[in-house]
Image (cartoon, rainbow, N blue to C red; front, side, top):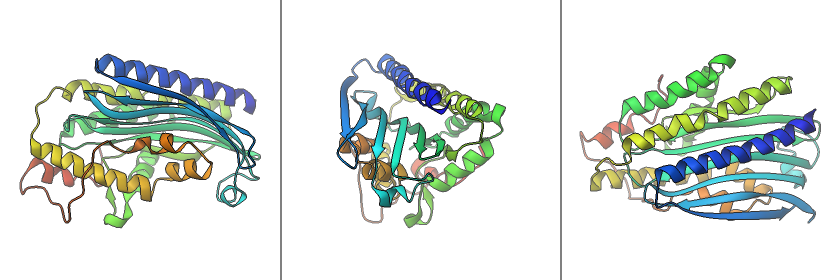
Length: 296
C-alpha cells in the first residue's frame, strides 16, 4: 500500500505544478518559463531520480520557482542519522515553490508539500506562508481564512499555525518572523496512510485559492520608491532565513540536489543597509509590527 501512495503522491505534485503554472500564465501575459528536467546520482554514484524545475520571469511575477522532484537511493550516513527514519536509503517527492512579485503591494509566497520514506518509516510535511510588504490586514486575514477552512475537517489549523509561527523565524534577529505565517507541519504520520494522504493533498489543493486572489487584487496598484525600498530590505531578511535556517535548503544540499533548483527561492533583487529603519509613522513602520505571531 505504501508504494501505491508514493506513486499517487508523485503524480499529484506534478499535476499541482501544472495547475499553478497555468494560473501564473493567466495573470502575467509577459511571463517567461524556463523549464529544466534534471537527474541526479545518489551518494554512491548510482541513478537517484530527478525533477522538473520551472523558473519564471515576468512583469507581475519578477522571479519565481515552482519545482517538483522525486529522488531516491543512498544518502550520506551521517545525514541519514539526523532524519526521522532509519538506514541510509531515502525516497522523497514533493512540490516546492516560491513567488516574488514585482509590485511591493503584492506579497511573496512560499509553499511546499512532500512525502518522505526512509527505512521502515515514512511521513508527510509541508505548508504555506505569506510575506507581505504593505500592511493590508484584510489580506492577512484572507490568507489565514483559507487555511482555517482547509484545516477545519482535520482540526489541525491551530497546531500547524503555531508550528509555522515558530519555524519561519530569524532567531538571530530577536525572533522576528520573515512574514505573517500560515501553516507548517513535518514528520506527519497518524498511522492511517489513506487519511494522511487525503489531508495533505486537500491542504495542497487550497494553495491556489489562498494566494492568487491577493495577486489579482493588488498587482495593478500604484506604489512609491519607499514601498520598493522596504520590499527589498524585507527580501534581504528573507534571504537570511533561507540561507541560515531553512531545513529544506539544507536537505537539498545534503541529498545532492540540484543547486540552481534549491536556491531558486532567492529573490532577484534584495537590499541590505546598515541599521535600516523605515520612516517614522509610515505604512512600512506599521508593517514591522506584523512580523510577530498574531491570531488571524
